[in-house]
Image 1 (cartoon, rainbow, N blue to C red):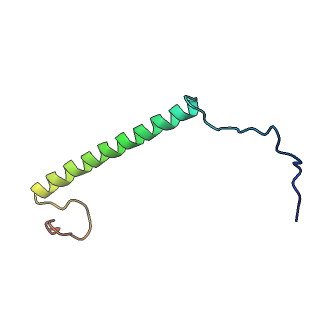
Image 2: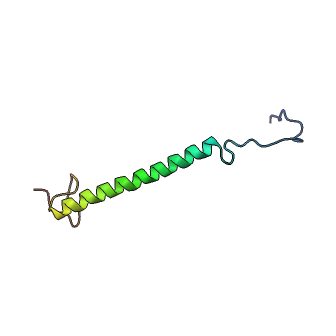
Image 3: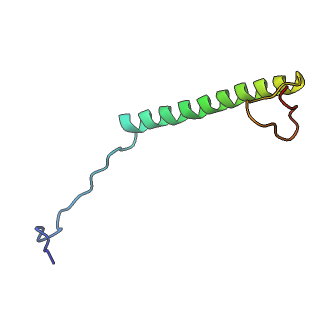
Length: 73
């Protein structure tokens, strides 16, 4: 069993990667908001195309038909 080179933990402190109001916190916040907004926009775009395809009696995506989709002609 190996021993630690540290003899005492007196005066030990902590080091935070990102503190309050640091650049890292803001980068991750902006990235998280951008990813969420991008996801919602892409979801709305897909749903609009899917509903338009269903209204036009066309398959939504290539492949075997699923429930409520017209068969591929």
